[in-house]
Image 1 (cartoon, helix red, strand yellow):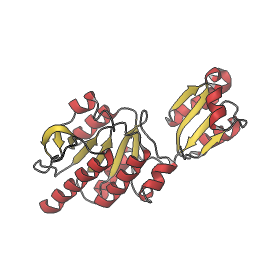
Image 2: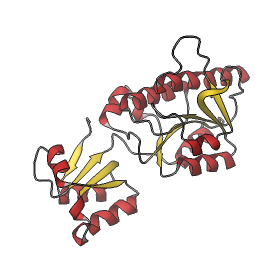
Image 3: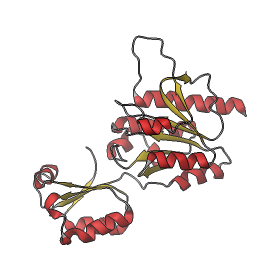
Length: 246
């Protein structure tokens, strides 16, 4: 997984109290009682995802070192908020340009997309807290340093976040097969580009809340592109249109 791990009750508690970015915490199943209430309260307070697992899982992850029933995955960098992303657009005096990723699980795809987001000057990336890769060491390495420059927000509900952005004036374009030609669509103005997961594409509810579905033309025998490739082409098309609209 190539993620920094901290385990043991005191180390995990101190990590959470320090305010450092944490992707997720694992607790042993039998540890849901009072002795872990301090940890769970801190997790709720900091809005950090956690999961109960069996003791054998933690034994395997820590090579049977003394984990005391808890393990935390440290994030490669601090997460931003949606407000941070919109503030950057305002600071640059640009219309918001945001990438939303629906359950991307491959860290190499996320890292490659962060690199493209930085290259095209987009203002940030939105990922879900669950069923998605987080800012791991592999993501940081694949991003070739872009993780340090791109604002990544991690939210509990993508649909709600999408609708909040629409209320703020953003137009949402979901990238998926069967839509209008992306190269003929108007992708200028405040824009959110939604890219679906590697296997399932954009989830139904999220797709229904997009303003439009756009597709990249496919002239060959295959019918789909890797998520990071499709996302990168879409992001560059937005940049091209922005340049030509000025």
